Amino acid sequence: QQQQQQQLQQQQHRLSLPTLADVVGSLQTVKVSAKTNVKAIAGAMSKALRSCEAFVATSVGPEGVNHSMKALCISRCYLAAEGLDLTATVTEVQPDAGISIGQCYAFTVVRMAVQAKPGPLASAGVGRTEPQVRFSRPPGHQTDMKVAGGGTAGPVGGAIAKCLREDREIIITSVGPASVAKCVEAMVLARNAIKSDGIELFFFPGFEEIIMTGPGAGEQRSCVRVHVWPEQAMAPFGGGEPAAVELTTNEPAL
Image (cartoon, rainbow, N blue to C red):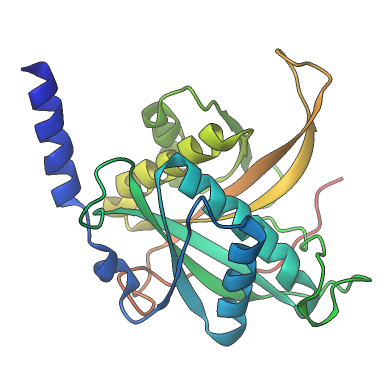
């Protein structure tokens, strides 16, 4: 009986979600599959941003979500030499017919103009260049967080929402696919929590190398570091998602 109640609650939750069509509107879409080469997905994302101001990427389940975030990181590297970058937000949407396992997410990605950062292999979109350093809030107005893949998204989402209401930038470190997926789930929960306050959540991800502490201490690992910040809610951009405001790059504090 308890299992039936849980299934009913899950079904009611899914029915309360917006549809993918609600989010996409007239925007171009990029479908992300965990089986597709992540660099190929990043190439499709970069191509979309070169030709239009925004697109929506869709993915299902933790592996698909991790693939989406990795592709966004790589896409930023492909675009950096051209003076382009991206800002995104994310929505949980109703799954397509036939999908019964895994949550479905739609990433609304908006093109941004930044200072071009030429690199030896990055001309004409060939090769990768580290993106410009970006912060949305000045030093002293940032909060660092770590997300565990085996943890619960609810408390992390609540902590993110609290910081957003205080107009802080949150820098989230995620190591491993499960951690990245949990980070995205937490951002969706935080975004839903602050909507009634007239606040919108935006983010961008990037790769960084870190030295592990605790288990595996001293080991160098690649992680996804996600910058999250609040803006006043704006009119929808092409679909059901708000437009991202233009930000400028900032050099890191010494």
